[in-house]
Image 1 (tube, rainbow, N blue to C red):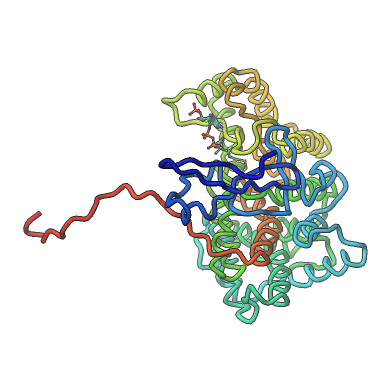
Image 2: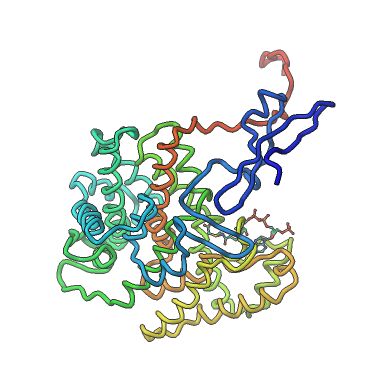
Length: 427
Ligand code: CMC
């Protein structure tokens, strides 16, 4: 196969190198396009633009394949744990038992929040969205660890990574407690990462807290499935902010804000709200699917469609099975799951969805499990962020290691050409 592409412009031809990845993906390297031809590449929404080379996550959207560091997502979801996957993503290899113990210990001893940082929660209204709280508090972590903010110092980065992974569940849980007006309880580092989060979210200082292993395993699977997804909107945000050499807390906070949007991680909240609306209005699945197809109606079938997958999102497949299993084990009879299954069946037979290759994505079924676990709808996206955190960190670290230049896209200017200033009394 050719290793250059030829571009012809204004009667001249230019050879552009073709780059090939380890899974045979090919791309045209246009880094010198402007200096050689005066042209830039225009691709709003980056629908066809690779922003980096990366060795972390592989997706084949046509075949519905997702692998972290080469390991199929199905195997990781079945056999691994979230903290092990976090290690894999960030460090590139599965840890030995000894390394895993050290990793686990390093994270679990950092779960506590500084008492002064806890006061920040009180400044928020009771109905503050957890994503706003998480973004603000994660950014504020940088003010408590000013000695660890240098992205070029490996030891500083390592301790910030432990702190971020350790404290994020505490921050999320406190955002829930603040909304309820309940006391913040201290983490218990003898518990596992997920048990600790569940106790911080649902426990109270007056009673012993029983952890349901079914819930723990379901959450483990959900966090693993969300842990990375290559250059999506929030990850690209983390990389872009990171390219300015901003500290890691600022970069992750920016990623949380990007994830919040309803077309990205915010879709999991929207899916449950959509299912609840269908149930409340007594609509049947067909009626809602028709609304989602109607150009004059703003409704979309939330949890359907994906920029990269033109096939079943493999994560949706795993979550669909897990949600049926979890609900059965918990003895929950979910009307919402019934509606979701119905919507999926009808959409997948509908010409509109078939021709556009729109399939359920990760958010379509995840909210049903979060809902059954008792997570409030507004906090669903914060759970997505908890899962995505190792991916953001891995991508941020890879970027720093690559020594990539600051991210700074160009544009094609379409505004007014030069014109003289008109004084106000002459306008
Ligand atoms: N319901 C109805 N129509 C849809 C949907 C949907 N969920 N998704 C896409 N379409 C239509 C869209 O109207 C367009 O039709 P046409 O060609 O006639 O104009 C066509 O399909 C292509 O859609 P697009 O918006 O150009 O595709 P995109 O790659 O820019 O957007 C997406 C991808 C995920 C933003 C979009 O599919 C969507 O809005 N889905 C619903 C929100 C959602 O579930 N987001 C979570 C994504 S997965 C997790 C994550 O990344 O956070």
